[in-house]
Amino acid sequence: MHVEGQERTPKEINEEFLPELKHTFAEDLVLKNALDSKVINMITVAGTISALLIAIASFLVTNFNTDINGQYYSYGIVTVLIAIVVAVLSIGFFVKSYTIRNYRYPVGHDIFFEKNGKIKEEKVDKYLYYQKNKFDRLLVKEYLESIKQSAESNLNKAQYLKIGQILFLCSISVVVSLLIVTIIATLGTNIPT
Image 1 (cartoon, helix red, strand yellow):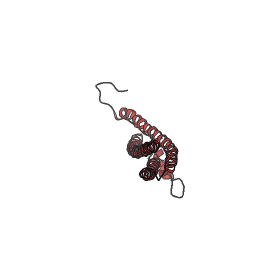
Image 2 (cartoon, helix red, strand yellow):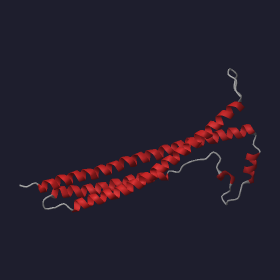
Image 3 (cartoon, one colour):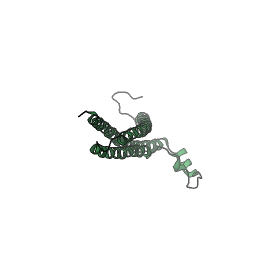
Image 4 (spheres, one colour):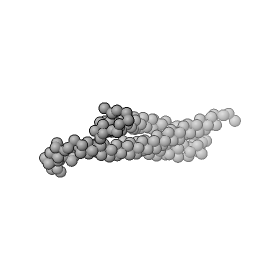
């Protein structure tokens, strides 16, 4: 235990630092799981709502009287195409976000196996008989590299998710604008002259 005013020993530093690194790495994995969950939910919601909005927009456009509402009909077709493209783009960004899997683990299993699947006995022995201070130093390095890579992957995942959400909101606003134009066009044809 550290006494205030005394210089800390490497052992004391290690006893505090390594658990903190483990905690930080665990928090990065929790964030990764939360982002993955949000992405899956957004793919589901975007797919469902986009399909519904496109179906509604298509229904409204096909119900235009093209003789009376020619300009509105053209706008409606263009709007439906824009909504479809933007909705597909948003889902594409959600899927891209979900596919980011560039995570690294402090002590992965891959260093202990040859390409043919056979265990590298010398690697196992090396870790088993490492001196405590060298092993702790190795663990600190591995955790730092893993934390860095996980943080970068989470940031990339969050950026694609954000772009997908913006595009999804744009697709909804495009269909809403079509609804507004449909209402205006419908009201315009129902006004007695």
